[in-house]
Each structure stands twice: as structure tokens, then as C-alpha cells.
Image (cartoon, rainbow, N blue to C red; front, side):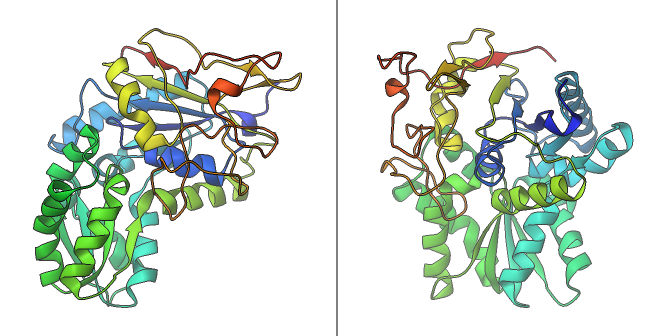
Length: 343
């Protein structure tokens, strides 16, 4: 019988952005099974009323509970800002968010200087980051800036070039002008745009400033929480990953690898994650080496490291998904499947 600690982690977001948190979790807690739900039918949440966000979030959480998860990670700054307290009241399992980990990392990086926060309109209007920072440091000011176009750029894959840099500069100007000398990526889409954000922040501030990735900080918090509560899995090896969406599975699959850093090859059908034979045992093709193996130049930065969506292996070598087979032959170059569900 599977112990409660060996049950999967549940993670949800309004769409694709939460995959940056999943990516960080799979680096930090590689043995954990994860079930991810992207509410692509109702994205974005950042422009919704707080009441609507709470209703949507409860629906997503109940789907994950139905999948037997042991805890839920809210991989959405908007939900963490306006709905996490209600989730903790309504749900009989641990619920972790992204605001406090991001604020904690920002306070450490800012050294007393003003912290700038880029986020959705809902996150900024909620005042969640100023409250979280105030609970950690009474002498640190926070300046917030809603940056909705950055979400669209990330979703569309506009990750570098003149347009992302111009948009990033437009949103950063008021933050740097207010004295911010560190910037929190207060939306889980934004780690994909770290390069233009970092470059424009440095240009405006007259030198490099810390860019805080709440996805990486959240993964560290989750790992500590699971260990402290006796909820860390006892299994060894790579955990599995199930990807659920509420609409547009093919579109999700087409761009998800940018966020996740692993190959995603859903075809719109309802299928469970594929397992393949590698050395006599059943392994998931979502196993990604994190021990210094080779990396492809195609990667996404989230916490200072890089991962290729095609680097898959179980023995420290560098292999593409096409190299994994049951008898040394070529398996189809598929990634993680995407399952569409109804809420």
C-alpha cells in the first residue's frame, strides 16, 4: 500500500506559468510524483474579482484532491494573494503558496533597500507582497507594478529581442524610479523573461540588481515543509508528472516545454503519463538528470540553472527521448502527455 508520504504533490495555476514552479520542484524534490492542473479554460486569473478567483481556486484544488494528493502548491501569485487563506480554511490538507517564499528571498536580497515587484493586476492590487515583506522586515519598502503584457509575451513565446526588452523597461521604470534595487518576479510566467528583465533593470539602475524568482524560492519552502512534516516521499529515483488542463491541450503542449524544460507531447487525448522500459524497470520519460550531465543549448532559466527539454536519462548519460526504448531500439520522440479534464 502506498503511504501518505508517497502520494503525489498537487500543483495548480490558471495556465502555463505554474510549470516554472513544477520545474523548480522537480529539480529540488526529484523523487516526488506531481499532478499539475492548468485552468486554461479560464486563464487569466489576474484580471478577475477576488470572489471569482476564490471560486476557481477551490474548483482546481478539489480536482487535485480527487487525484489523491498529499499537499497542494498554489503556483499562482494571484491565487496566493487573494485566495490562499480561504483554501486553507476549506481544505483538509496543507496548502502552500508562492508569495511568502518570494518575499523572504527578496528581503534577503534587498539588504534593506526598496523591493520592486512585477506581477498581475490582481497580485499588485491585493497588497500581498507588501504585507508579506512587512511581516519579515519593518524597514523594507515595497513598490509594485502590474505587468500584464509580460504574461502575454511569455504565453506566446516572445522571450527575447527588442519587444520583450521594451515592455520590460516600460514596467521597470517606475520601480527603479521609486528606488527599487531588487525585483521580484511576482508572477510564475515571468522567470521565462528573466533575461530581458534583468538586462533592463541593470540598465535603469546603473548596474546589476538581484532578480528574485519566486518559483525557486517556493521549491525550497516546499522541500523544507515536506521534510519537517514527514511528508517527503520515501521512494528513490525520478518521480512522475501528470499534466491536466481544462481546455486547449494541444496549444498547452505546444508551448509547455518552454516553461517546464522537459518535452511535452500531448495530443489532446486523455491518457496517463507514459512509462517506458530502460533497464528492466518501469521508468517515466519525465526523468531529468540533475547531477551535472550535459545540457542542450535550448533551455529556460528559472533559478540560475538550465535544463534541456530533451535531456533524459537514468544512468547519468545524455539521451534524448528518442533514445529511450525497451530493447535498445528507437522509441517515438514523445514527451509528457496532456490530459484534458472538466471542472
